[in-house]
Image 1 (cartoon, rainbow, N blue to C red):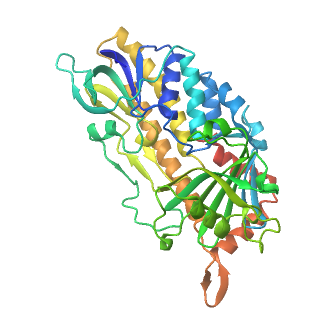
Image 2 (image 1 turned 135 degrees about the vertical axis):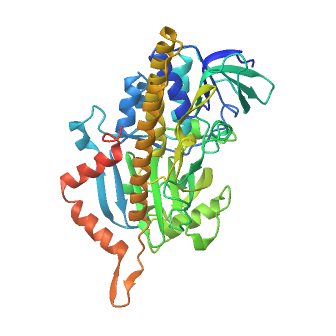
Image 3 (image 1 turned 90 degrees about the vertical axis):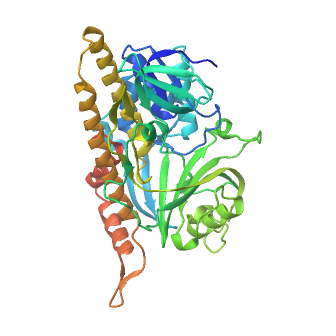
Length: 446
């Protein structure tokens, strides 16, 4: 499909950040934009699943939340458990004192993208696919325009470019913006440095408190942490791949792979996932009769992947390369999945960025020599917020990474067992639960 020769705004990347940026531009009155993506529609996979309260509020502010509210599972809490008992639960209900949305939403990322894409289509806007950026250069006739070249030979001249093209951002690379851990090279081998995630069904279907929808469960054990989120039948159609129908309840599972276990397969097979479930998962979904009196096994492996976790942030999220260049989402910052903050920060960045861009477009219409103060102030504020989130997730990571190995020969207690004991005690107090829910919600870090 042919692209326009000129566009005020070019959005590169149609994940949650790019789609939200487009919807926010429309909401704030800017319709002269084009959004492109390098992959064919339908090739995205499940990935992130949590949308927190502050992000729901941000989407609601641009009238883009209703579709997700009707499609997603309402998240009531996040629970920390051992393999056979609960340690701590952070309930979201106390957030009703602070927000009209005192809950999280659980939905696979491809469903989030589908809903946001449908909302965009309702305004007559479609993502242009597949179009891969291969180059950028300053326009010869106008120093505030950049000529963006695509792999099919087309060129779009744009005044503002939003790079929402992921952790390997070509926009960031061409713009010469560095991307590194704010604390320096991270050579850590913590237990969450490599993870496997999968969507699976079980036979027979498991039962128990951890299989009830509306809760994200983190199961801590020696050397790993295992994640379990029941999807029920809510997303069976959207998660169906290769034409294989799914009739049973789907569960999202994730597991940190100890470094000494070696590197996990690129696309972990069913037997590999089953071994992780039996070794680190909660008793209710294992096939181990000694742990589960009604053993279950994985029936259908819907989808699986692996990824490494580390933190990095762009040196800056705004620069001039002729046009005003912005980075949002994973192009601007990445961090561990602890707390489910990544996609949330990306969406909020995109909502606020498009408002700043629209203000600058309007100011430029009145004064061609307007400076970049509006854009620079936005970029500095969001960069600071990203650093704060990275610090927050690193602290969660340190807490999750504690092991059950004895502290010393003369002290038969482990750091992890002390952590669990403290959490069990503190979890009895409502104000502690409320504080944890507040931290996860993002309401204090919009």
